[in-house]
Image 1 (spheres, rainbow, N blue to C red):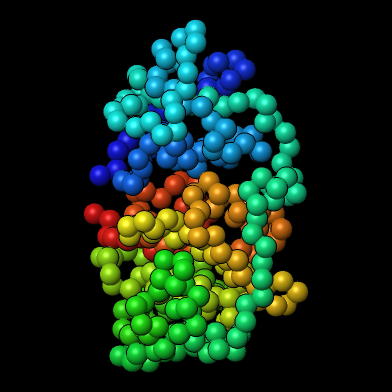
Image 2: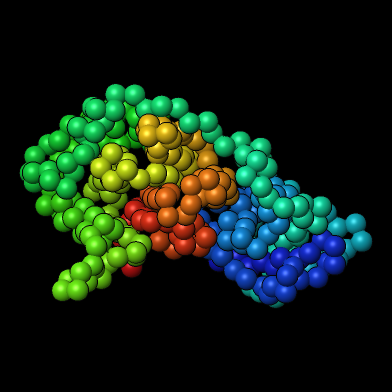
Amino acid sequence: MARKVWFQLVDAATRGAYADTTADSLRLPEDAEDIGDLRDAVFTKVSRALPASLIASNLRVYSNRAAYDEENGQPLKASASVDDLGKDDDCALIVEVPTQHLVPRTVASVAELIAIPRTTALNELETYAEECLSLTEWDVGVVHKIPLIWEFMSSLGGCTTSGEMFWRMEDKQVVSLMVDGWFRESTRDRINVHANKKSILMGSPGIGKSTLLCVMAFHLVFKHKKNVLVYRRLTKFEQENCLFYLGYEDGKVVQFAVQRCKAPNAISIYEHLIRQQGISNVWLLLDGFRYEDIPEVVWMMSRTCYPTSTVH
């Protein structure tokens, strides 16, 4: 069960509250195991308020204010257990923000800092297009073959077990609703009430939400000429979060993938892409997150989200 943890940002130079912030809390994901994971979660929540070149590992975490004020107080090791630390605002964890990283962020420095993956051309474009172009027109009750999409996703958390997808009425209705909201222009007689809104799809595990998102990502690229960044939270044993990008360069479809990608890195990659292309030209899709575990800053930036289970 996700646990609420309290923390206070502190300025290393003044040892006082960072940027006039007060104690705040976040819900640690169920798979968070140590201070390193907690540090990543804090960074994800507050990254927009931090110095531009700072990364999660620059933060120093102390068990409480008393520990921070000790003459030779040492930060907690990244591998240390979270246990019951930060259980309320009176004993909030202290997260120290260093001052030596107060430098302007440029597109070049971001690329150097997080090693933005190099794009490569996507091959067999006609076959990819055949698999996803007519998604909104697929017949219900029919098995549709998506072998290339399946192969592309095989090292990124998977997408069906057979390279085939059975198209149900519910799938067609969900896709129709989202595509209509995203792309139908309002008229005087017919206002698009879903325009410019985020979409969230909830349901029990194993009903095909993730596969639908994967196919939707390719559909957005090939049908609507969008640049799409997909961030997936994987929960199977020994799997780590991953990210992939599909978009256009000089009129050609390109791609890159990051097989082990924590949230701060995903956010940095997204920010780099929108600096290059503009925020309206990069669509962010999330997959595998429970609603309450979605980092606030990631959810604010996303176009749509496919959580793993229904929110009660």
